[in-house]
Length: 214
Ligand code: ATP
Image (cartoon, rainbow, N blue to C red; front, side, top):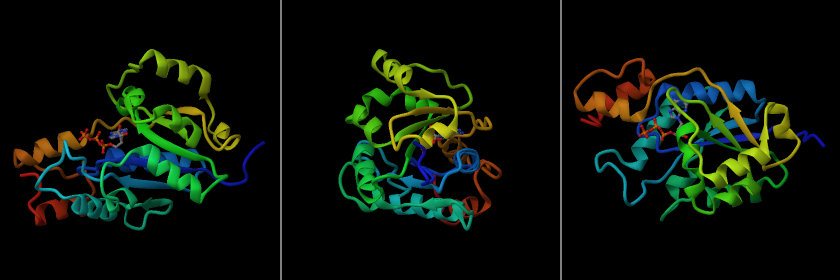
């Protein structure tokens, strides 16, 4: 049976800072998968990571500036508002409770998907959402045996398959290869080099105004 409700995609990340690789991926998901929306969801700062200079609130602010009024792109701040460790499984469980029948898609880049079987309660994630894996320049599939098994059982090749169930499929989605990472942006800024055209202009200005990542 095909769902009449369009899927909702959730693209989580540190967004430290958000860059055009994130935004272009979000737009290509929106346009290619016939989604209700793409939610960009910055995560709270985990205790073991984190840059004392750039707060979670500032990362969130940059995501908001980057998205602006772009149709179909929505900023969701629930992980930043929550205290304590934030696990995707808890976030998806909460969204699933709000939207019992809608196809949900958890979006992860190829690099993040390689480590997927180390995520907290990762097998439960397939019960809560589809997984959409974005291609990334230089990325190679490097999966644990358990993850490879899940992919073999769940893989679909067409986005239409995302509407035939509310969760449980894996779709690999090629996006325009943009060799941009937050690491690259931070490294350039630390060397006092420009990040123009790697991040949106509004984010560039925010970083300059607040003297971030220097
Ligand atoms: P860092 O360099 O700090 O690790 P990042 O650039 O990977 O950061 P994240 O905020 O960790 O950014 O990314 C959020 C999600 O977006 C991850 O699943 C990541 O794989 C994906 N992603 C990031 N950059 C790209 C890109 N250029 N193309 C496709 N996917 C991307």
